[in-house]
Image (cartoon, rainbow, N blue to C red; front, side, top):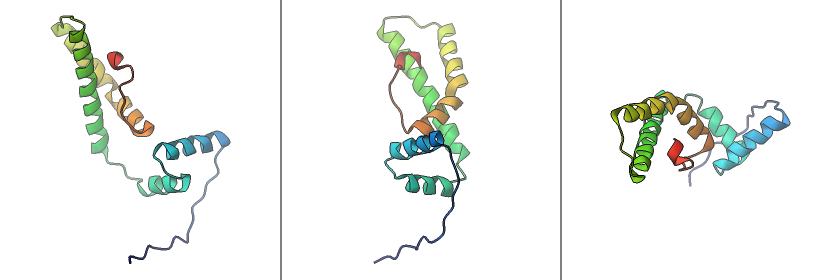
Length: 115
């Protein structure tokens, strides 16, 4: 049997009621107790920038593909200018989308035609 290290030290901070509710929502979104989530977040202080970049690129590609397929499915012809606009919009939004997806816990197909 593997012995787990005994946790006998603590770290604390004061938060407002609204901040506490937001922390609980984030923890529950990942199916963790608040203590488990806070511990995981504190111990994972150094986030990999490469992961954020990769996620941003993937989400930009996803947005382009969804919009392209949506347009083609409606029988629209896609011009070079329209394709360029799709790519520019996806590139412009990718960092915000990556950050948002990391905090909301996953991908969805909501508003696919507007992504």
